[in-house]
Amino acid sequence: MAPDKSVIAKLSIEEKYDWLEALVAAIHGQQADESIPDWQLDILKERLAASRANPKQGRDVEQFLAELESEA
Image (cartoon, rainbow, N blue to C red; front, side, top):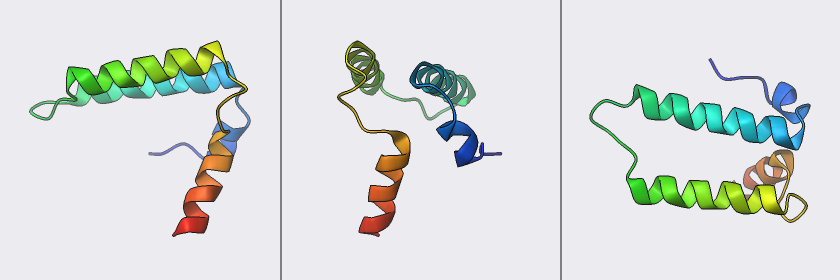
């Protein structure tokens, strides 16, 4: 079951990062034959660290989703 977007939107930046880390960990734990290559996990970790170091630089998830929907 996917969480409601309005619930995620109400989270603080730090809570969103925590939620994302938990989601990635859950996905990683559920994988059987299909595993995410280490190089992709490394990129995710680098991007997460960069975003945490400068949280004002990135886009809000709601902004990002709105842009995706407008392009469709």
